Length: 186
Image (cartoon, rainbow, N blue to C red; front, side, top):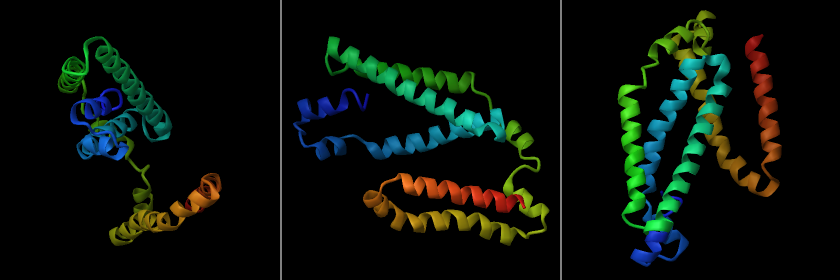
């Protein structure tokens, strides 16, 4: 609905014509919280179900389902809006999706915690480090180093990628990752 009809409602009913005003009209912070909670949970659930060795499959299924759902809902709300107007009929589509999602979540979706417990029997990297005799503090440091370096480097690589392009950074990142995996395996 956000993609198909809310910008038109913002323009028609609230006279918001500037692109930034239209975008600010949409409660993106609430959408972000919702997506952060539900999208992450669905990815984790799918990884629990397929196992660590098939994470790519889980991500692919999740992305496919998500983007097909966005496409279908954009089409449906646009179709309804074209035939019945911007309000309130297109919002009924959203209400139906919410009701269907709630029903499916409550009655059909099962907890996958047991799958995760089964999969984490000695296969996770922190457990590999623990098995090598590292302390919890040392494992914590290793677990913190990666996101810290990544976050700090973003300050430089983000603007540089605007000037030099994305591909060199992606290729370099893949080589660094390959080397790191090789070193961890040694």
